[in-house]
Amino acid sequence: MVAIRGAITVDSNTREEILAASKTLLTGLITSNSLEIRQIVSIIFTATHDLNQAYPAVAARELGVTDAGLICMQEMRVEGSLPQCLRVMILAEKDMPQAAARHLYLKGAVRLRPELAGFFAVAIDGPAGVGKGTLAKKLAEALNFTYVDTGALYRAVAYFCIREGVSPDDPGRVESVLSKLEISAECVNNTQRVLLGGEDVTDSLRTPEISEASSKVAAIPAVRAKLLKLQRDIAEGANVVMEGRDIGVKILPFAQVKIYLDAGLDERARRRYTERAAEGIGADLGAIKRELEERDLRDARREDSPLAKAGDAVLIDSTDMSPWQVTEAALRIIHEKTGGLHGGIQAG
Ligand code: DC
Image 1 (cartoon, rainbow, N blue to C red):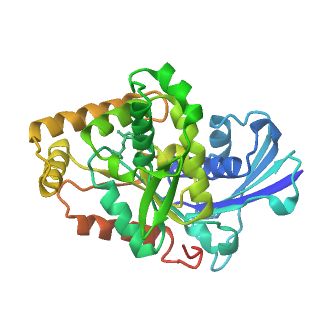
Image 2 (image 1 turned 45 degrees about the horizontal axis):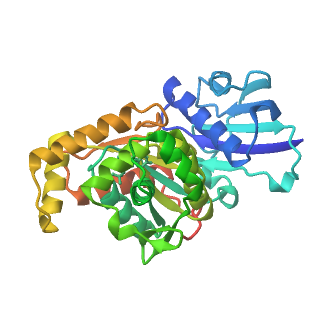
C-alpha cells in the first residue's frame, strides 16, 4: 500500500474551477505514479474552509475511479493557512516503496511543499501562427527554463516519413515506419534542436510542405502515442515552457500554469506573411490564410487529442497585442498562479 499526497489552489470558489482543479490534481498524481485506476483503494479529499463547494467524487468518477472509497472533509479555519486549497491523499495497492511515491503540489500549493513540487511546467497551447513560439521562448529566457517546441517533433515525424517515401496521407504506412523512427530533442543555447537518429534536422522543418504534412501525421494516434512519452520525459527532467496543441489537456495536465494563446485568423495570417517576407521567402497572404485555416480545422477536429483549451488554462487573446504585451500578460499570470513564489521552482 502506498499513500500519495497532493494539493492545488483555485482562483475562484466556483463549481467549474474546483472540478477542473480536482481533476488536474488527480490526473497528475495518477500519471506521475503510473497508477492503474484499479489499484486505487481510497481517496481522501479536504477543502479549506473558504471553499464552500467541493466535487471531488464527481471529478474522481469522471476520471473512471468508480470502485474506490471516497471521502471529502472541510478543514478547520487555521490562521495564516493557504487560501482556497484542495488537498488529496490517494491510497493505492501498488508494490512500490513509500519513498518512491511522487507527490504533487500545484499552483499556489507549491509553497506548501516546495521540496516535493518537482519541476515546474508552463503549458502554452493555441492555433497555428498565433505566436506560441515567440512567447514560449521569451518566457523560457525570463524564467531560465527549457523551451520545448512540440510542433517541431510532429514536423520531424513528417520530415522522416517524406524522406522514407511514405505519404502523410497514409496512416497505415506511417504507423509501420514508426518503429524505425529514432527521435530526440536537446536544448542548445536556449534553442531546441530536433535529432533523427542523431542527425540534427531542425533547420529543415519549417517549410509549408512540412507544416501541412505535420498536421496530417499529428492526427495519427500511433504518432501521438510515440511522442507522448518523449514530451513527458523532457518535462520530468527540467523546468519547461512547453508549447503545442494538447499540452494543457493531455501531455502535462498537471502543469502549474496553463495559457491558451489565441488571435483572429486574419491577424495570424498577417503575422506569418510579415515573418516570411522578412525571411525573404516569397509569400501570398491569401494562400497563408488558407493554409492556417486548413491546419486549424484538422488540428481541432481530429479525434485524438485535438487542439483544445484546458478548463484551467488562462486565455490570452493577442489579436490586438504586441509580442511584448503578450509576454507581460503571461508573466503576470505566472506570478499570480504561483503567488510570486519561485522558491518552489527548481533552477533550470
Ligand atoms: O506548432 P507547429 O505549427 O509547429 O505544429 C505543427 C503541427 O503539429 C500542427 O499543425 C499540429 C501538430 N501538433 C500537434 O498536433 N500537437 C502538438 N502538441 C504540437 C503540434
